[in-house]
Image 1 (cartoon, helix red, strand yellow):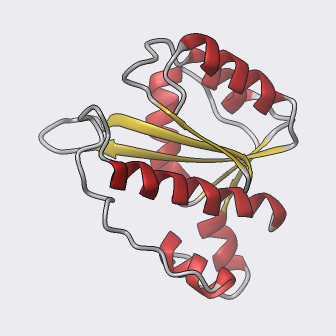
Image 2 (image 1 turned 45 degrees about the vertical axis):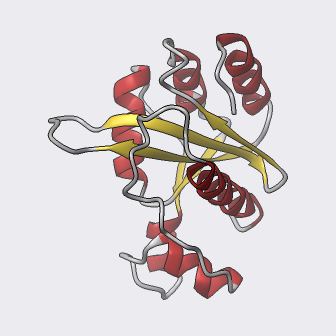
Length: 163
């Protein structure tokens, strides 16, 4: 769990020196006009995955530098939702995005396939989506939320090798 500015900047610097990263977000969108970001998952590989606490890190603009870097491919599933949230909190205009949902459509799968279904079809892994609608703004996070978020991050890290 990355919860300090120093750790965050170090991680983003590492990510800027890779060719691809996988990103995901967890958020709460209840009784608000805009979703409130509760967690960011960033995978540099399937063995190098991080949870970033946007409630502890007040300045998320370093992530904007990564989002805006055209040399690094950002891999997301159903990217518009995550990118809207990330762009809003970082001020960045994301570049060089690979959306696994859209690519599934080009490969003969449904272009509206969920991440859980895509992972099941491609990797024969069944994801428990039990924490999707939990309160990602509550701290400390519940151990089941952390396990879920790390599992999503590890799965996202696998995409680096598929894309």
